[in-house]
Length: 158
Length: 190
Image (cartoon, rainbow over all chains, first blue to last red; front, side, top):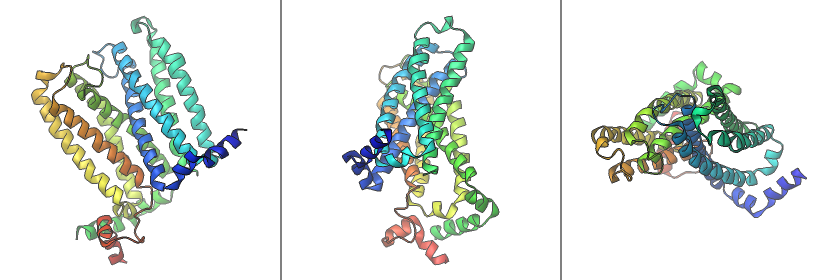
């Protein structure tokens, strides 16, 4: 079932468009990387603030709310460019171990960001247990690092 | 002349034990490259945060000079790891990188980005007190921030394109491209 979707995706018009020119895939890869930089910026900005490592003289809530906006925009760009890239190499990804590691990490990252981190930080940060806040920040940085690293390894094992 | 010097140096470097070992190792090279890409999240991430503030896109509650000052440290930690891993990656496959069109453009643009950052930093130190909390930062500031973002975007594109063999030495290329890639010096040496 899942495999047939990957086969269909690669044979689709989108898959054909991505595969037609090598530069198309490479350019989308570069945009994917740029969005990764923006995602990294918003994650580090917010989480290093939660860890009291940067901008300690600016309220944590202000930093976090600003960062969350660009986090969402960059995540959307990453998901769209990621899907377009996948369409060009779908059957290869289906058999690639790191692709599935990345998808699992990505799912964990999204659930964590919107299901745990965002609701927790919606209130007054001063009322939260400082240890919980720090663990949330470390988990957030770790999961996005894992997503990025496993993404890079897809290309090494093709 | 410059091409010969660069290629001669790369050929000498490429023959060293260090370079061969790094090139032949499977995991070491990949880990270094992964680290190089991961550090992009910190270095270019912080750069984006600062440039986006200079463009008036976000964090307007925080004075511009304060933001730039507070984030300079994590950004430079990121760029330091980026430079170190970048140089080590270069030593692994020096001839190919030296004769890569994209690598050459990338290095030139890194200088452009550095000069832009340096001149802007001086401008910020001199003038920030007059516009630090303005709703819309002055034009000079916005132009410098946009220049920085565009130059870095092209650097990322070039970095990614290095992996492709479109203009590798040995391919059919015009005399200009042979010169621009430095391949002209490789064929002379062999």
